[in-house]
Image (cartoon, rainbow, N blue to C red; front, side):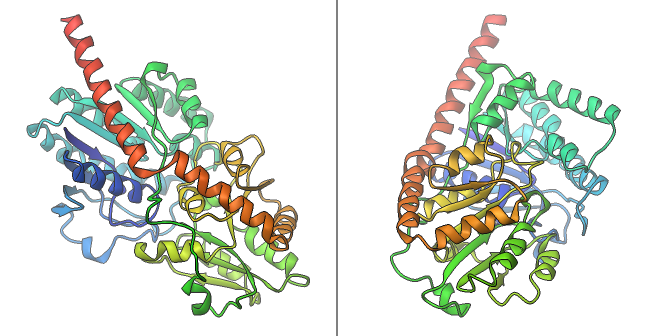
Length: 417
């Protein structure tokens, strides 16, 4: 098949949506499909355009076995409120001519990745102009997140934006998302049941496996062999509810100095986190690490930490969760007990209320002193990864879904004619 992927975030971004869009394109290309991509220059998670992409604003390149067209995007230093909206809108507008150019290629499927939902009109239009299947993949519900987090305010604005979102979603032949809870949200937004698809984020479970040796990061950071390591690795953004980590570390410092905390990543919250951890000698910060080091990094953890903002937890299933379970380590998540994150983490870890530092500290202390319990949870985590989120099985199902959707669309069109 000829597949056009329309995603603001793409390789070589190492985390988040860019990571998954890049891996999807690479896997499809390796498995015999012809792939083109329209994307913004890499900027995430540092929130600044990669220096190698600052000029020219439009470019074409070969990457991960695909032809990639880049269109410019404005990246604010502080991505909040109206700035975030303008940020997404700039790519939504600048990429329109690049998308229309792809009409001459005549793709079979156009996959638009949201966010940015502002790309949905151009993705849908390109598909309709070429007779391609119009597919929308929702990594998170950016409109709902924007209102819940206070990025956008006003009842009138909410009504207009939500109406436009529902109207646009119902135009696509298929709309996929990454979790069952989010799939239910699609239906609540008016997407017909037969058009809803499950496309969970995946993990390369052949590359990320439980370490059988001590991680090299332990020696590099000077962490004693007998210490328990709590790791957070990912983008340091506002949706993560990260400030609970230094709060819990301070609560445990007098009685559990042998517990070390590693925060790995970059993002808008990094400076605030470093300030909150001032004076805590058992807290270590690492910048975002090379992708080839991910197995060693994840294997550093005795316990993975997965804090989440309560405003966003039902609208975003964090992509970092796939690596955590693949590494075969237990997880402590801060989220509501009814969330989908909780339903997954309870299989292989502990759930505590969001933004509750005393409860997080209690859970950390209990797991730190129970290696047998950690081992059992780690085994359960790896089992979940092997059964549910292996990359090959997830993407093979995607291909079959695309073929079925395209066949059904053509059949419906021929019946109308």
